[in-house]
Amino acid sequence: MWPAAYPQGYAVVDVETTGLARDDRIVSAAVYRLDAQGNVEDHWYTLVNPERDPGPVWIHGLTSDVLEGAPLFPEIAAEFSARLDGRVLVAHNAMFDWQMIAREYARAESAAPVRQRLCTIALAKELSLPLPNHKLESLAAHFGVVQQRAHNALDDARVLAEAFRPSLHAAAERNVRLPLLECRPLTEWASTPAQQRIGHPSSYRAGSWRPSRKRPPCPYPNPGRYESDKPLKQGMRVAFSGDTSIDRELLEDRTVEAGLHVATSVSRLTSLLVTNDPDSVTSKTLKARSFGTPVVDEAAYTQLLRDVTPADG
Image (tube, rainbow, N blue to C red; front, side, top):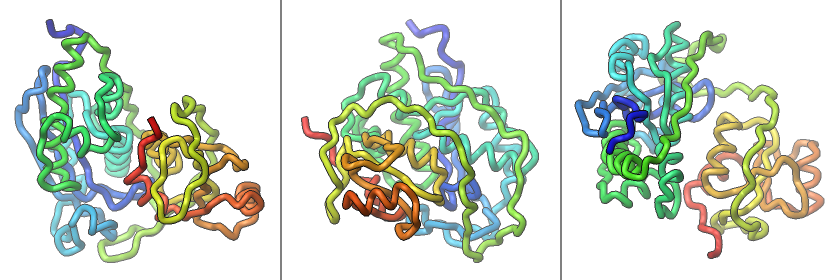
């Protein structure tokens, strides 16, 4: 019997962006609308002119020339809203997609009609799916869904929609409570002083101070220090120092999702320090030098995050 408390409709969303920072913009968006049982009703896709450099073209494949004639976000906001209205937003790492969408609407002096979101990573954990990691490709492979164009918003949304339906049915059969979270639209947005246009290099604002967030303990034992030219291993203790181009909270969330431990300080047990300014005189960098703790920059670390070795069984 289908749980009565389950939502009546879903909007499976994927957005490709110029980067992962607060100032970054959406370059393409796709929505698959699903009914209460996860069946596809229709789908929609659009390019978006980000009014700035497109960022990692090697990932999403969208060049300045391709995006130059695309509509601006305010020009597609109404259609996007119609696709989201009255539905739960579903995405893989939904916090990221929701934050990017909310910021775009705030810049357009509007708000997305979304009240709840569902992260398929969180749902996979609720169902205890036997995945080697929490990448979309792993979720797709588990359900036999063939991915044709990774990091293409339309294909990623299709893949997620096809993987979400059996996940939803498995949850319903076991009467699992769906991991729904509230979506709070931004009410204001302060634009950067200079509007960046396509073809101009992107720039990132320094992150502002924020209180640390208490996280659950890492379930894996610490395997020791990171070794150069080898992958990270689940359980490693990773500390961060200084500003990062990716929103720090998102970067830490990705670290935890990979099975790593976010360390708030550097000790002899720290596996790795991530900093874009290794020569700075901070307590973390000084301790890292004294302990011989390996240090990498943010760009190298985000690459390492893509292939974290599972913890020893």
